[in-house]
Length: 385
Ligand code: AMP
Image (tube, rainbow, N blue to C red; front, side, top):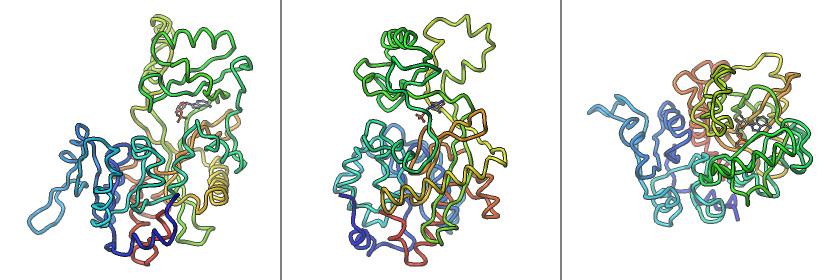
């Protein structure tokens, strides 16, 4: 059972004002730490041994004798053998006694079992704990059902391999790297069979995953990930903000499209099939006439999430879209927490966030601003679950 409002209030009772901003050391952690210290809060990174140097050494805060910050944005790092150790009772107690609120990211919800986050993690989470599960495509109720309820356009679902009648993308986990994608594209039932054989032989696809794979229309168009923020602290009509837009760089997919056609044809067979391993991000703005639809989409999502998963979306969220040939964003994925590409706006802020706030406003800073304001107004319980 998620924490009740009364439990959240009692957890926050002994908290300092403002609290410490904690996050798991991966994904968007630098953005969150940078945002926290920009807003005058302290940052804590929960890291895993072997992947902690980024935070513990390279972005670590260094202060002068009088306490002023000379460099860095990571004020404290706690390193664990495994990320999943974060939910142990002793770590939870330490997080609470240190006054930490946790900003969830995809590393947190991937490496810590969702059932433990939902039922056992008694530490205030900035955002909606319940909504983390909608990202799991294997769940019966997931982001597709929420988008459908919201009336937001999604890629057409294809019921099975035999019904593939156009370019489609097959979505399933990677055979061995289970947190990564084993996606592939196909345009006909016969191509599906041939490609499955090749991908199983290559070790990208596990045959057992095929029965539950989602097959959907491939939207031919550029990827635009819209990084929104929703604040429950202001009147509803001011709650939704668009901060910025990012796109991804996906390992050999991007390598392939950078090759001229003649060279692509010279590649050996297995190199011709792209993999969708996200390795970085770039920043974008969107044609201005498309913005109205983007805001409409964001509003619909906020309303539907409030209705289906109260209290609904709180803070940052990301709608990942391909923009189709008519200029309409089609949502193929949702992050009901900070998106994975927000580091592109570190230091510079997001273009749209800056236009709104008249100062560099990244997603991380916007989260910290919300925590600071909620804390000053005694309303922290309204932004955590
Ligand atoms: P996802 O894991 O859903 O975030 O998708 C990973 C990548 O697959 C995206 O960044 C897109 O490049 C691609 N993708 C996913 N769904 C679609 C779709 N329906 N049409 C076109 N590309 C897609």
